[in-house]
Structures are given as structure tokens and as C-alpha cells.
Length: 239
Image 1 (cartoon, rainbow, N blue to C red):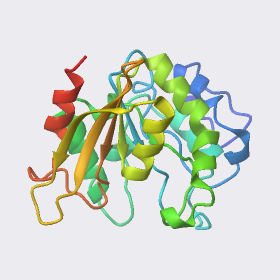
Image 2: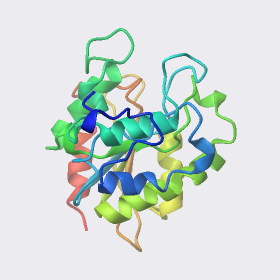
Image 3: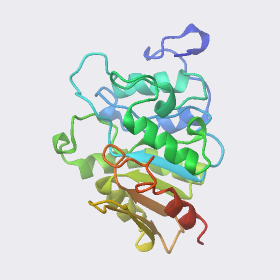
């Protein structure tokens, strides 16, 4: 990790670099700061300027009681003070895999590049910042999502995001309802035995689009039979 000025990224007293990313961090609810979790999955280059896409998982995985995993404050400070150009999907080691080679990392990076996006320049986060081993371990997930929404709303408005790409049906359905994206403008059915469906919805009022994709922990987006990128590309071209 590259840290500016030799500062400790987890030191609450260390000054943060002036950046749009640091301003977004001000919207993180204080109730989650001391708890195990993650917010930023890409660096300052990704959270600056205008972006067509914003990628959202549901929440960070892993045991929230495990040693070595950061609390939200530590992860945010480390992310903001890290070199401005990085992506958790290409620059981090998850579990025992080589850097960037965990299945989810490979699949998300593939999808981004299929959409002509550079992972290090693409904003990504989780709808809920708190870590859990599974969805069922989250207590009152809708309340947690609502608590974290001020951050995401700030990102979407400031970066003028046109489409939020959501991993999994629960995350996508919550975001779609929040944004009033009620018109289905595209769908893709996997060409395999399970035939899972990914969809894109649009808000008639704002034009905001929400892609609800089969989760990359289960669907291999690198396979042509499961790749939702053509649907996303087609829907982005619609007004």
C-alpha cells in the first residue's frame, strides 16, 4: 500500500489528502465506523470527474470477528490515502489466491473491461458497508442499506452516474426501488440449465438505470453463456 507522507492510514489523526473521495467519506454513517467492513473498492481516480457506471456489491464478505480485517474507519483511511489509481478487483489478494485472481475479482474485472472500463478508474463499493459471512447473518439489511444510502446518493449525484450495476437480486431490488427504476428495459437469460435472468430497469423520471445481475460468486461472467455485458451495453444506449 502506498501511503502519502509516511502517514499511518489507520491513524485517526493523520490528515487525509484533499480529494472528492475524502468528501464522500464524510457521508459514511458514524454508527458503522468502528465495525468490521469496507467502503471503497477503487481509488481516487475512480471517484473523481464524471462516470457512467457505479458498481455495487451487497456487503463485504468474511468473518467480522476475524483478526486482520479492517474496521470501516481503517479501510476508508487506507483507501483514501493509498495511491489514487487502484482497484480491489485487480490489485488486492483475496484469500489464498494470487493478486486479482479470486473468482469474483476475475469476473468483475472481466465485466468492466467488456464494457470498455478500466477497473482502476471505475467507482465501486458495497450497498451495505458492514462485513458478514453470509446474507442471512446481516440483521435488518434494509435498515443497514438505508443508513448507508447517503454515501451512495452523494457518489451517484456528484459523479453523474448513469447506471448502477448491482451484484445479486437483493441488492439490485433495493436500489431499484429506492431510485424508482420501475421500467424494465432489458433482460438476459443465461444459456445453461439454471437459466438465471439478469435485468436492467430505468426510472422514467430521472433516466437512472439499475442493472440487477446474477451474483459473480455464482455466475461466471467470463463465460459467454453468462456474460451480461451485451445487455448492459444495449441498455446504456437507450434514452
